[in-house]
Amino acid sequence: LRYLTAGESHGPALVVVVEGLPAGLAVAREAIDRHLARRQQGYGRGRRQQIEHDHVRILSGIRHGVTLGTPIALEIENRDFAHWQEVMGADPVAPGAVAPRRVTRPRPGHADLAGGMKYGHRDLRNVLERASARETAARVAAGTLGRILLEAFGVELAGHVVMLAGVEADRALLARLPLPELARAAEASPVRCADAEAARRMMERIDVLRERGDTAGGLFEVRAGGVPPGLGSYAQWDRRLDARLAAALASIQAVKGVEVGDGFAAAGLPGSEVHDEIFHRSAGEPAGDEEAGGGLPQELPGHFAAGGYFRATNRAGGIEGGVTNGEPVVVRGAMKPLPTLYQPLRSVEIETKEPFQASVERSDACALPAAAVVGEAVVAWELAAAWVEKFGGDTLSEMEAAFEAYRGRLEAY
Ligand code: EPS
Image 1: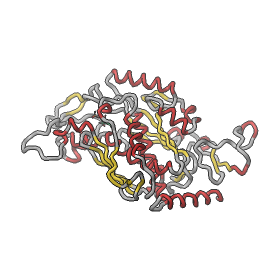
Image 2: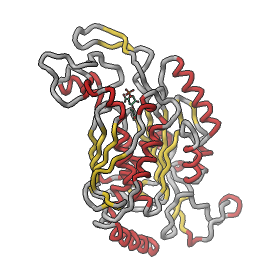
Image 3: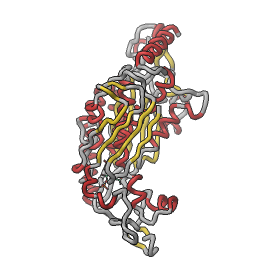
Image 4: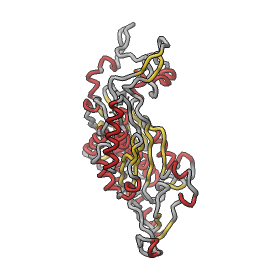
């Protein structure tokens, strides 16, 4: 399974080509549009989101609502292009003419200067147009296709915000929520945080920062439930699923850190407090209260039931040795505060080499809720890719047969 995106932020459109999905998978255009719309929401977004109303146009690979097994090409129009035709047009400009809206002032924290040096661009617009997080719309479209495949097998996903600009959600509270409830509560929150009290304080924090011309980052988490054991592999470094998820999350614009399971917190604890003990249902019925009456602890919500093995904790985030273990996959991305600040930062003009103070015309004060939706999409994609590798097949029914055979094997294990 693979995909490539193309498109500039203020160009005519974003496009994505997806290859490797089986034939026979029902895909509704509305499902892709729904996730595109979710990505555009979130408290702290700027004026650009009032211009864009992302919709997907399916150019190939899907006919009458069903995948053909051939490359799927999707297009998302940039409505803002209407105002940028002269700036972003593909045709040559008159000799000697200066491109309109030329950028020669690299913004700290953006790709501008490093990208200009790398490609020899004297107009930094050539860098920023592609480096922009607008590109994540295309990734949500692709990720939704992966998600639709996973959902056909009962896998559920939820992306949500756990910390915003230092305001922490109650993690113990969130950990107790079953995945559908977590997803519902996050969906209802303008900052995509399922802890309503923390969400209120997060919005206040965004208001304060925006007032100061500043920006907010934070931590988002993606959980996937109903994931069978055995996706990914310890056999080779580039097949380890945690490594692939980490790369996918780190590839999201402005993400500077990734955690799998308890991640950085686990590094400071003794091993006895970190590793998830293994139980088997044959030892008795789950009593729910191990301390009081002995018996077995409770299975975790989102656990993949096959074969009777389970854990009572999930500090590993559902992955051991680069392989899923049947517990929910839990990963986190740390997003830096967006570098496009109304409050100026010092930089250097690339023609004159003179210092200037970088500031902007429009920006998002916070895009963390959107990053949680993009996180869901890239996690769905990596899980779907591992799924296709394990269960193979050119058609969905071949894949279903392979999955059922595997499930039977797990029951007997
Ligand atoms: C972005 C800057 C802003 C964001 C944009 C990403 O765009 P503009 O410069 O046009 O105001 O709104 O995000 C999107 C357009 C989007 O759909 O997410 C950047 O520099 O990364």
